[in-house]
Length: 380
Ligand code: SF4
Image 1 (tube, helix red, strand yellow):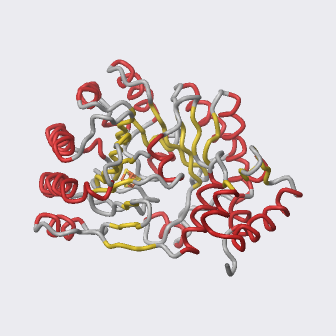
Image 2 (cartoon, rainbow, N blue to C red; image 1 turned 120 degrees about the vertical axis):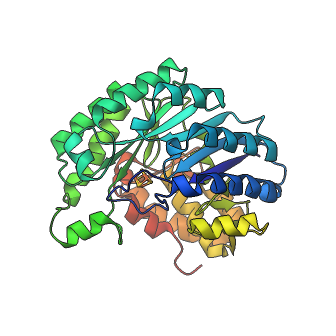
Image 3 (cartoon, rainbow, N blue to C red; image 1 turned 30 degrees about the vertical axis):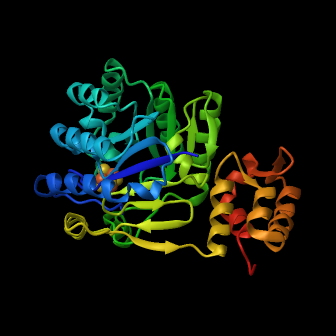
């Protein structure tokens, strides 16, 4: 077994229009107490990992690259003192391209970071501006060059398709520019309009027009095709990696490996129980500083665990292992799953590999939402 540690850094320099992640603009005031609270929480909760070796460490956000370097060093040193991180093989930090300057690259390299995940989103400056991103396309190229000069070559980039103003043609250019950067890993998500975001309000007022669904699907199809041609393995619906560069940390979310999530809004899973920290910066700091647990616990019902297994499994190229499904959830669940899956096998959307693993075919990936819904629980 193995385990991962996630640390949420809920600070951003400005707010992107589509974003509903938990993040705030109060780094200057809350940065130091927050980092100290995270370190204290690591000490309080390390037992949840039950002695499993920690193989991955992931600083996500928010914008971790906004942390001033002394605070980042303090955080990493504190985590090292609280947790046994000697066995970590993948240490990822998320970054905004305009923060990735030579000094930052050298500093994170010396802290042991060996993977950087950059929020690129698009290579069209007009779109980047419209959605409130701080960087421009040229800065992405510079950031990648700086990282490589500092010895960090394991670079992942995030893209978003279906952004207002994007066309299929402009998306083709974005994908080409992404591939030309030679990242090791690409994550690409379809834009969603989340209630409460600026983008949502802009749509209400008619200021932005949604990209039609068939164009979004076409963008996704192009993404899959181009990345495949460039040698990337499509190992999860939204994730692509060159051989040997799948994100070990993210894979642990999909294969039910335990992970400890520290910081406001972070989630954890210890193999049976999920825990959620509050999306409340001051509330989190106050609780942890007082020596209390900030997290709420949720024991998943059997049905929820079945649904998770099916949903997370089908999103990955590993698929759902029907033998394990039967062992863990019984005959009725297994019958439901295999019966529903058969329809999709007949339609060419699902196939069985290694005798028992049900995986989506390329065609099925395009229809994944509906198929996953069908295979999730009905009444068992
Ligand atoms: S940088 Fe990331 S977390 Fe921060 S507002 Fe933008 S999308 Fe949200």
